Length: 215
Image (cartoon, rainbow, N blue to C red; front, side, top):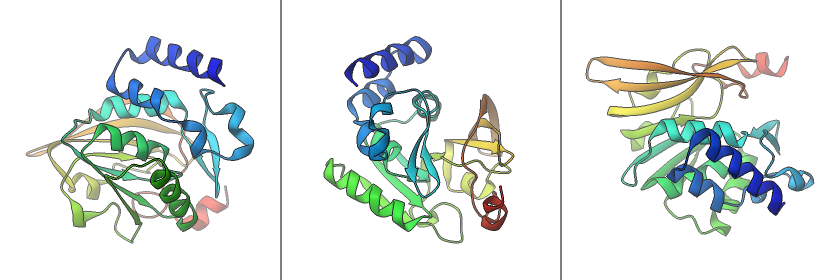
């Protein structure tokens, strides 16, 4: 595993360059956030199962999203899709505060256990509600969405500060483009960061759960 980890981070640095994001990823134990049967693959550059039909994103995508998010140490960040808590752990080391929302209660329990065991304390975890995001703690300096939306979630833009950034996959159920959205005084700008594949967002700005289950 040690050799695979070294190889992975040599590769990430060759693509992304040296950054706070890469340093934080390197010191965060990815193996503690995945299914036990996949431990030998913890530092492969691919998405891995975490249970409940969900995955932990491949390291390159995580690095690209977090780099694009431009998280500062003073930021409050909203994460849509806690999963097993891996990306949440990364964000907690990059930002001042992380508010993370998860729709699957079992995964919320797993994430809470993982994050508490590793001593991360600047995180609020919430089960998702009918409204996308968590308006009660807004506005946020940045928002990261770990599920593919059918269109840009305008309700999340409303939860950003002016100048705030959101990184979100947008497209079809099976394939998306990774977009960086920056909020302006009179609207927002969009930068396309390239193609990606995420599990679909359920509900507002995504798809009905019944439709996703038929895929």
